[in-house]
Image (tube, rainbow, N blue to C red; front, side, top):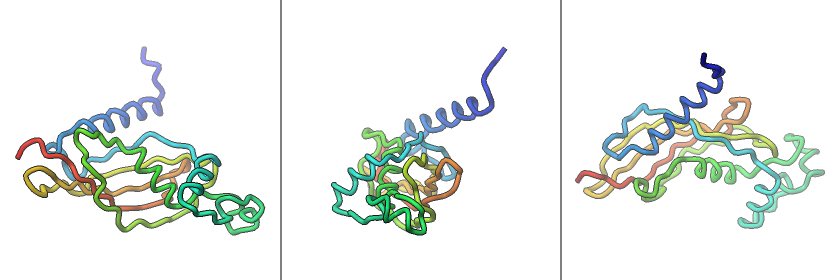
Length: 165
C-alpha cells in the first residue's frame, strides 16, 4: 500500500522534472518545458549580508522601526537579492550552462518579507543556436512566495554549450 500523500507525490514529480531539465543537452530542450526549483527562506542574515556586499543600506531593509512604519509594515528583502536568490535556485549544470546572458523585463510585483519562502516556476520559451559552440535558452520566470503569490516576473537568457555542432 502506497502511503504517499498527494503533496509528497507532487513534490517528487516536480523534483523529477527539475532533474530532467537540469540533465538535458541543449539539443533536447524544448519550448514549453516547465519546472519549479527547490525553495529558499529569506532571512535577516541574507538581507544584512546583501546590504554589506552592495552598499544598499536603505532602512526598509535594515531598520525594523523605520520599516514597521512603512507601507510594508516591517523589513523587506532587496528586490535584487530576491532575483539573485532565484538565480541560485536554478539548476545550472556547469557542463551545460556556460553563462547567464541577460535578465530582462524584471517586474517586482510584491515585497518579500523576512521569513518568506521563495521558489521559481520556470518555463523554457526558446532554445536557439547562437553559433557552432553555443545556444541561447530563454526562460520565463515567476518567482513565487509561500502563498503562491508572484513576487517577481522576469525573462532570463543563459548561454548553453551545444553538444552537437
